[in-house]
Image (tube, rainbow, N blue to C red; front, side, top):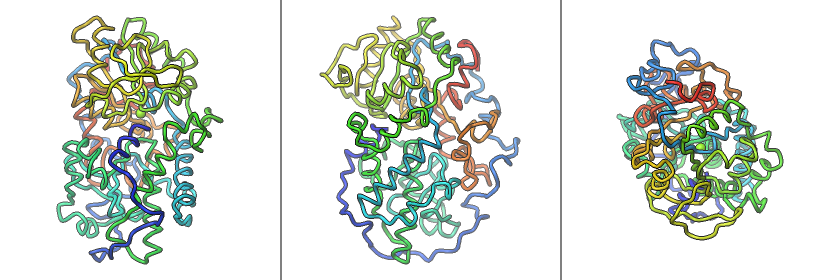
Length: 475
Ligand SMILES: [Mg+2]
């Protein structure tokens, strides 16, 4: 998470004064009232009413496997890599999202002078508005969901639904925006640079609450101005709020309400790995598999969460640990590895050692280490993670790794062969937006479903699910 923020901030130095918004002019179009049955918008039908016959084939073929023709076994890989947050380390998502929301709202109200009228409302009032994977149209104040080809499936302005007429007034009769089209073709082209200033995908449970913050801030500004604005300048404040919450130095300095709360009450926020899960990892180690961890979290926070979920000897499970890895750049760029002593950075390292812990780094260097550690020129490498850009799309497109996507929504929605028993399903499931994987009314896939189908070998609700099976289980 720290990575995502720091990467974006390279291209996003806030020039905003403390004022809430710059009023450029009135909205160009007269907007029609909202309409639930709109073709371009979502249906209010509950997710659980989805007809089995309409489930996309990729998941119907197999509960988990994306390409049903290939067999998939974890044991087939020489090297297995894992993301930490929301992959090995599962959070109690509702508690965490509520904490994050509170931190973001407090920052905007106290530090940037936003009204608390909407921002201070309980998150429960908009629990159904929240879903992973919303895309912010930063300047227009809209939140969108898009199809695999980038066209806009449906959206809101603030928290208010956009109907067909409203969508076409913003995005034309084809419901297209060049930025989302580009994102669908290559999301990394919008990660930094000018496009990153106008679009932001909310990819995981670390930035999911920023969607409701953004929407409520838009509602606030519209009310204060008595109309919609042509351009909103909220986003830089939200980036600053995220930075204030997640900055890597805040964990050790106790300067973030977020880190302080997790430090004081870890059991409220972090789930412990089951005995099954620990046995599964140990079984892979016993088979001489090379296990590695690549996390965006800084080494102190990663050690804290890992100790809580895996126990004090967690490092023994991995042949190498990379923290503050700055994904997706880790898989595309050539940043050097930095050594660590305790939690302190030391110096640039070129020769990675087994059992080492490093910061930053790059995939080319990592792959060289994996060749040495596995004693194979072309080791078969798997990477498992939850963030569909950082952990799935980027390694799948830029390395020779196979990728497994972790998507808790499989379980939360109780679909594609999974039982609906996720403890945070009220938060993760949205009857407003419909399924994470598709738009309910017309059964069009979302871009997230498209990314999983195209780039992942397997999609799982959690590693705990996999760990119920032996390591040689064929999915
Ligand atoms: Mg993660």
